[in-house]
Image 1: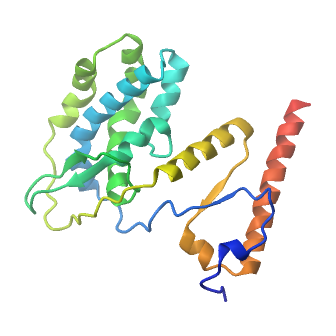
Image 2 (image 1 turned 135 degrees about the horizontal axis):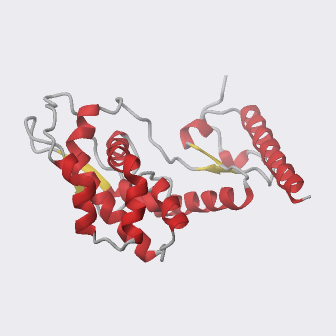
Image 3 (image 1 turned 45 degrees about the vertical axis):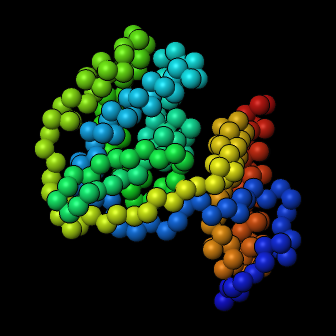
Length: 234
């Protein structure tokens, strides 16, 4: 049985071990509600247009390939271009009110509400990604793009939620953890070597043997990735 209360500092792990001992994602609760997605889709559609336009300008992305890459990550909190999603909190005045979206000052953990926002973003943007890129290339204004992309979505009536919706508190994320995530993504993109993040509670529940096994597995995966890269260079 795994020993609890194990101190990570007492473990001797290989120096090349590509692990980051960070608790990034709290446990997820209920499944994403389709009705909730419909409630916030209009707001999220318009916010997605604003986010895409701002990100493209701030990062001087003005070519088709670059814009297509941006669109692929626009709704993902794991990508810089999708980080805006983690700054949103879903709120509701009362049981009969429609869900609305509130912008927060800092990014938060991606739990059910964040996943609901991601689904709403994907439902709004994915099927129109090519059109969106075309609008950006043509220099369409945010107002014009909102009208083209979101008008039909925003004209639809939303389904009733009743008491099914459960609000969850917005939990801020540590900026250092996000910097580490960006570093991992950059390394993966540049080297093809994966780095895996583990939750603190999972690591603390492991025995020393479990940790050594995990370390060996991760080291082997990295060596295999390095070998594949070397073969490609030959």
